[in-house]
Length: 140
Image (cartoon, rainbow, N blue to C red; front, side):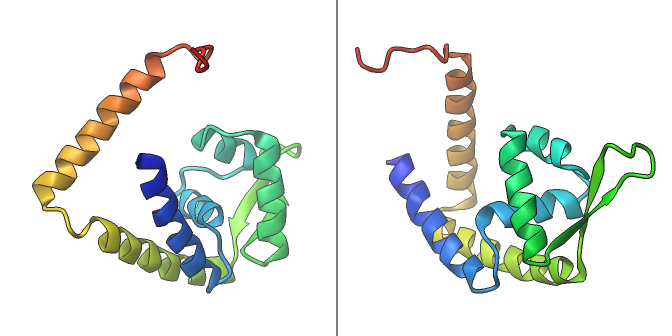
């Protein structure tokens, strides 16, 4: 049920973000860059716990679309710093409003107490799942 619910939420978010030229991944990357949580591709990969090669491809596409630029770091010439362009800075608040609207649409039916309980339950399930061995035999 969580997978189905998540897919419905993500599909609507993807469709709405596409109207302003973004994807959910691009929106998340812009958020991390704008908030200072990441400055390089390697930092984005660590922040999102994902493959650096996938991040590089994402940044390539975002750069081609005009949302970010890369420049060599003044501290370390081997490193490229990712800068959000004016286009990216202008798109981010619009994307944030879309994401907020999406969240309200899907979670607005819950009271604050229910939302807190839902988040707490998910956190507990995630914490438990993270203790599991990645080599679980799902066939048996």
